[in-house]
Length: 117
Image (tube, rainbow, N blue to C red; front, side):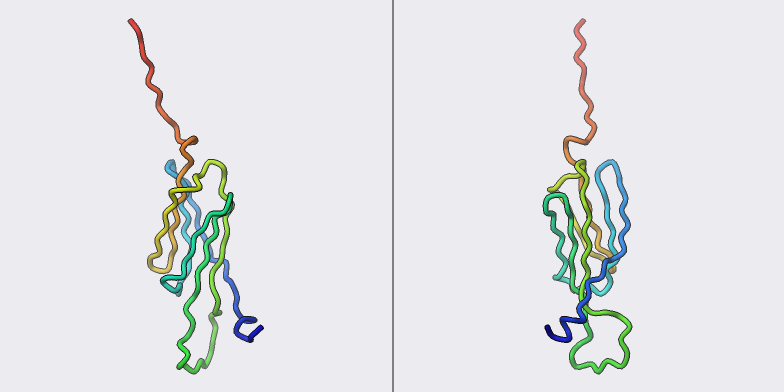
């Protein structure tokens, strides 16, 4: 294992979770994320978010480092009333926004009543 691999740390980003009638919204603070490195996956009942963080360019001589290299990783268990398909995600201003829709069978439906006269 190289020194760089030994220092690699996965940070669990802070998250806000909010429920609406349409589904669940997750907001994860992930500043410094490399644009193409974000991964959102669903495996059974677990939603997992992973991303890589920017490191200092190699031609820089680091005088002091207070931030850690590595990446972000966080998992959430999905309840049975949330769908496993139809999720959406976007990343803007250092925050990853993920929407998980409600499962079709949990959405209230109105049933028309036929009245015979």
